Amino acid sequence: MSEPSHSTSKIEIRALRKSFGSNEVLKNINLDVAKGGVVALIGPSGSGKSTLLRCINLLVVPDGGSVRVADTRFAFGDGSNLPDVKTLARFRATTGMVFQHFNLFPHMTTLQNVMEGPLTVRRMARADAEKLARAQLAKVGLAEKADQYPATLSGGQKQRVAIARALAMEPDVMLFDEATSALDPELVGEVLNVIQQLASEGMTMVIVTHEIAFAREVADRLIFMRDGVVVEEGPARQVIDNPREAATRAFLSHFHRTGALPPANATS
Ligand SMILES: Nc1ncnc2c1ncn2[C@@H]1O[C@H](COP(=O)(O)OP(=O)(O)O)[C@@H](O)[C@H]1O
Ligand SMILES: [Mg+2]
Image (cartoon, rainbow, N blue to C red; front, side):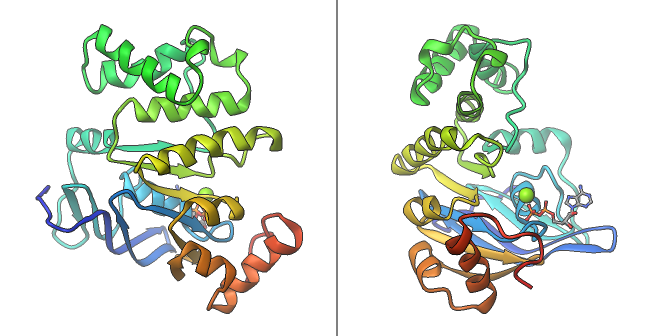
């Protein structure tokens, strides 16, 4: 089920398909992310962005195609067996995911939240897990919040803890699903700064975002999705400044006019 690959890309998606009942949500998606590459994924609500991210770490099991992250590859569809639970858990541990909502454990301190994965999934010794967790908290600028509970933190701080928690698994790639969409506007910048810092350190990332200016600055590639297909893909600046496809232009022009996400289906 897992086999080494000699490709230089860190993430390789081929002919990926996923339906929920009769709703075909991903239709033949192909995607490559180079080692250290940052891909921004944009598109209207319901276009399949979250499902694609979830297929990359197999939170959602695809119906067909293949997914490779680093050296681990899974194929889906005719004749292929579903990976067992243990294999899945190991794989998910190497793909850090950060969601719109932080999902921190409320009864644990910040430090305990970040230590939890290293302790239970990676089975690290407590002292090593703590050292690692403190280092990740320092990285996101929250060393001094180690002993506080999530309820005492701002939304931006909680999201930075969620990033530290994902980093503590020392993942091959990081996946962000609208990590700043639930934040008050004044708290967005501190989270984007952390993501930008990870980019500059060479972390391979796929970022679903509505922050077009940020995507233009930080991503090297941009993918515009609609209705389960990749409509346009290219260097981030080129696609944002000079989109080829009418659908991409319509979607982006809404941002340029209003600075806001267009309503669902506004680009059709
Ligand atoms: N678990 C699920 N069960 C059924 N339908 C789903 C599920 N997750 C997503 N969908 C549907 O898949 C489509 C794409 O959703 P999603 O991937 O969340 O899009 P986006 O993130 O671009 O807004 C939508 O029509 C949504 O209703
Ligand atoms: Mg989504």
